[in-house]
Length: 491
Image 1: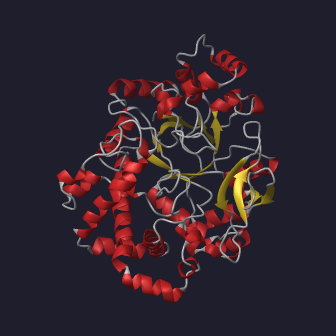
Image 2: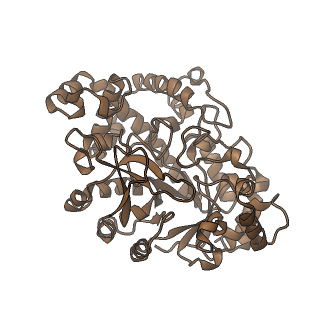
Image 3: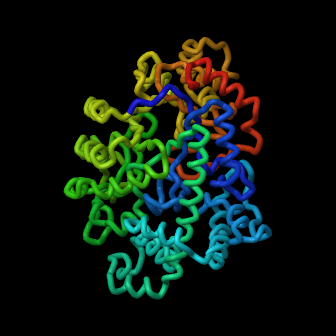
């Protein structure tokens, strides 16, 4: 999948400005897209859009198919008569997402809108087109509501084990509740597809993000439990994570259920193909997180306290890739190939033809000296100054070792760190990589107070950062466009 030489920006939808506590699919997103067009940027890369649960991570969602209700544009609902302007209110700080406030305030507003919604052919068509996941998701969320938000592993047995008679009675009794969750997904999808169409009209392509794993507490694991490595009580036998490394002596215990890959293979990877097909509708290009897990994945006993006793297990490899190429020909995929790489992982990436990722900050990491230096890149890759899991560029200069900083300053040819973010940006844009994606925090010259996530931690400000209104101004757009021109990343 060759990509043109171009540039883009990484910014979560949640980080967009808005008066309602979180970024949305509304007018501020359109302002952002117009900014990208003026800045000569061809890509907007986002984080996963799914509904988030405990911990607020977009990589731990209640569904691999649903969109978050928090991103629904409330002003559009008011314009459509489903809410009144004085009902919208506001929530949270302008520079941070307040998930607690959103949890309290957003659902009642959406329920008011649902009470005023009269349905129609478009809603019926939406539901008919999402039969492979929407009924189970609506049922899952409705039961979760009645079970006071508890994980499905703690539900009454008749629901946990999907007793069909009990589920049938529930569907009949709470049909309106289930319809509410379908309505929310209808709104979110309609608004997102409208926003995507607007982006495409401006020449901006959307790069979506798909976690390789699903959350244990998700509609997917509950409804399709046979596809996951669970015991007879539907509890995980083995879970996902990554092994110890110099930054984490005990490794990372993610806790996601692992796949029964042999059963996926028997179905021709049907569940995966349906997941990817939906993503192809939502995005122009899809980044698959932790792609190396298709070659081999780290498996940890579900009862373990940390990841130290885990082991590597072979994944589906090229059988999966070939199924994707047969079932979804021409799908644009970026493979996140970071982390512990082996010759086998590199061979799978080459055979797939998918572009991999290069993170410029890693070029100056003593653990992997030289692996990410720009002079080692080929054209078919995507280069980043950093990702959502890294420090900002200026934050890196404030936290890296003195030896690493000295190496970076020599490489960039700079005498101080004050404009180190621009040195990172220029090096990424100047590289031979066809695609360069820069986090917006680096263009804004922000330190680690604007960091999006610190892996293997909960709380501490993860997933909260928001761009201040007016930060993406005309002067910055002009500078970004000029750099894109200088480094051959304009049409």
